Length: 552
Image (cartoon, rainbow, N blue to C red; front, side, top):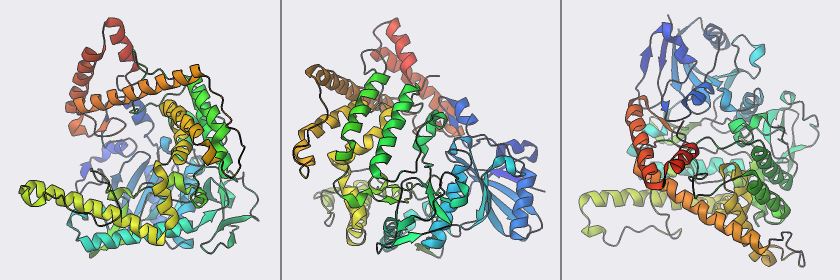
C-alpha cells in the first residue's frame, strides 16, 4: 500500500491524499495564482510512471518495496518526493518541471555540479544514487534525480530559537563554503557537466579551473558547457536561437546577455510576472522594441570598458544563488552546525560580481548599518515601551549579523567582499542592468550610459584618448530623460497599487489555497480603485485593463 501525501515543507503539516487522486503527484497542488493561473499550472505539470519510480528507487538502495510517498516540496521548478522503504530507509526523488530549463541539460548539469561540489570541494551536498536526463530513454518517462535524504532539520524550523553564538557559527560556515566556491575559478563561463553529457565540448585537454593556489587543474570527467541559467530559457526564451555558450571571456559573456535581450525584444516577449512598474498604460512609459534595441546596442559599444574595476570579481565561479533558510540543514542536536545545503539546480559558472549577494537567510526588513563597526541600539532605547524595545533588539541582532558577515568576508574572502561593496557603483550597475531589459529596464540603462559618458575620462584612464563611442543628440537625450521620468512614475504607481491592494504575497501572484478567495477579492477591488483613480474616461479604462499584467 502506497500512501500518497502532499504538502509544502512548512513545519510538519502534511495532508493525506487518497490513492485514487494520485494525479496530485503530477500537478501543482500547493497554491493558486491570481493571474495566468492556467499557464502557471501547465508549466508545472509532470507526467511520469509512479510504479517505475518506486521500482527504480527500491533497486538503487537494495530495499524490497516502497511504503510511503510524500510530496515534500513544490517550488518554482521541481516536484520533490520523499520515498520511505519497507526497511525504514528514505531517499529523495526530484523531477524537474517543464519550466525548469532546457531538457537534458538542466538535470545533467545539476548532477555533475553536485558531484563536483561534494567530491572535489568536499561541500555538504547530498549524494546522488541514480539519475536520468533523457525522459524518452527511461521507464519513468520523465527526467529524475534520486538522491540521499539530507540529514538534519531545515534552518527555518530552528532559526528563531538559536542563540547568538550558534548563529555566528552558522554564518562562519557559510563564509567558509563561499570561500571555497570563490577559490575555484573556471576557464570558461557556462554550466558544469560531465564531459560526456554535452557534445558541444570535446576539448578536455584544456584546463578546467584554477585552484586556490593559481594552479591549472585539468579534468576528463568535468567540463564547462552551454549555460543552463534560467535567464536564457525563462518566459519562452528557450525557443530562441541565441548564443548560450560556453564563453571563453567575460566580454563575450556580457555581450551574449545583451544579444539575448535583443532577441527577446525582437520576438515580442513581454515579462509575464509582476513587473517593476506599471507601464504601457495611458500617459505612462511605453516600452517598445526600438527603445530596447537602442539601449542594448549602445551598451554593446561600451561594454568592454565598463566592467567592474576589480578584475578579481570577473572570475567564473559556481555559486549558490538562493541561500535561504529552507535550503540549509543543521544538526538537530547541534543546530549551529550545518549538515547540508540543497537546491543547486541551474547553478552556473558566471562572473562573481553578478552572483554575489548577502545570503538570503540573513535578510531583514530595515536599514543597512552605516558602517562595519559595532551596531548601536537606538539612543532612545531606554525610553521605548517593551514592544518597541523588542523590535529594536530584533533589528539590532539582524544588523549585527549583516555586519559580521561582511567583516568575515573581508577577513577571509576579500573578492566576495569587494563584489558586494561594488554593487552600488556605476560600472557594476551598467554591467548587470542590460540583463533585465526584458523587464523594461531600458530607461534605467539609458540613464546609466549617460552617467558613463560623464565618467568616461576616469573609466578609460589607462587608455587615454579613447573616444566615447556613443553620439547622442539633444533630442535623444531629451527623449531618454522623459522616458526615465515616466519609468520612475510607473514604478511609484506599482508601489502604490501593491500597498493599496494588500493581496500580493509572492512576486508571481501565487497565494495559498486558503488565501485565494480573499486575495482574489482584494485584487479585484484594488484594480477597481486603481481604475477609478487613474482612468479619465472609458477609453483609458479599457487601455489600463489591457496594460495591467495581473488582469487576465
